[in-house]
Length: 168
Image 1 (spheres, helix red, strand yellow):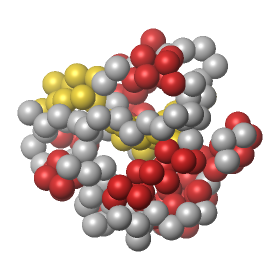
Image 2 (tube, rainbow, N blue to C red):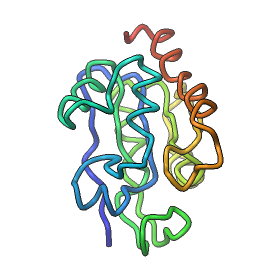
Image 3 (cartoon, helix red, strand yellow):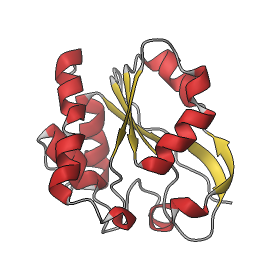
Image 4 (cartoon, rainbow, N blue to C red):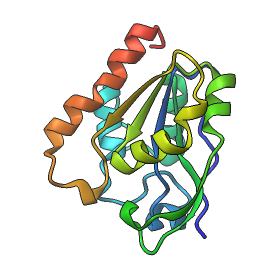
């Protein structure tokens, strides 16, 4: 049964990026969004106006922390053949509500439809007051029907929120 990674959380996070569950490539590499065709690092880098994709992994994580962005997954574990979100069953959620409560995060951005559906079913009922929740187009290579430019425009809402929250 695959298990997710520990959360990436800096000193003063304002935004939490949530995926559903790491892919097989990510689990093998022990890194968030390790599949070479996943657009997560490109999209988030474009949103933050920072070249994340070309940085070594540890520097990517340090950049997120510095910018007030935390990173985690909705699920702690699940059953799944392959990497497709549609194959997920037997979900066990991460304690996301508890992280939100103690961290000061004011917005959750969900990476795709499955992360959104899982979050709303498993986490949202225990969500602290005043936390904004927004679904973004998936960065997954399986979501290739949405052009990159359209995805990037929506992901820029992360930077807009961070500017509004004064985290930059």
